[in-house]
Image 1 (cartoon, rainbow, N blue to C red):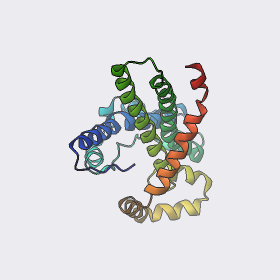
Image 2 (cartoon, rainbow, N blue to C red):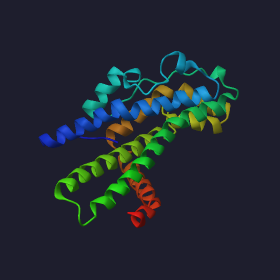
Image 3 (cartoon, helix red, strand yellow):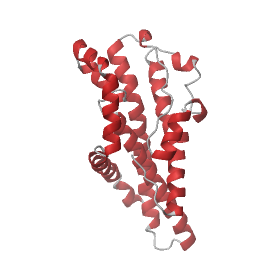
Image 4 (tube, rainbow, N blue to C red):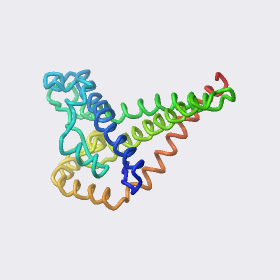
Length: 227
């Protein structure tokens, strides 16, 4: 997801807080999931490197963090893995790659559940104005949390090197195709940067994010009857 600064001072503060939240909360969960999956599949490299932790300081990439804060696009330090420790090289690399986006989907699903609860609480007629204001801001916060996680999940699932989706795609491709992609990986990265800069990905991703968030929200329809 790309966040653009506006001329509004309030908007600047909000966008800055969102980007800091991504750097210090969401990206660490994503990277931890990679390391956790790798360990479960037989590779302790992330654990030995001190990366099997939710401590954001272990995952923050200085340049990636600055880029995200200033321009809305950045990255964390990739969790190190050693595929030689896997029993099934291609399958386990793909599963480890998928763990990151999966963690984002899980976070988005949980956030949507809380969002639906808060939405119903806000509709209670007897709620006081002060309580309603607090619930409203919490509602917006959890909506942002869900949408940001969906954004990161879908973006990382794009089958473009060096995103997680490329490692998932590699599982299904023959060796020659993977060798071709690896050979031209630098050009593919330039192409990805161009797509981001030109905003070509924004439309399709925003549409898909909206549909998934709507689906998650619909799955919690039963909350309305309980509250």
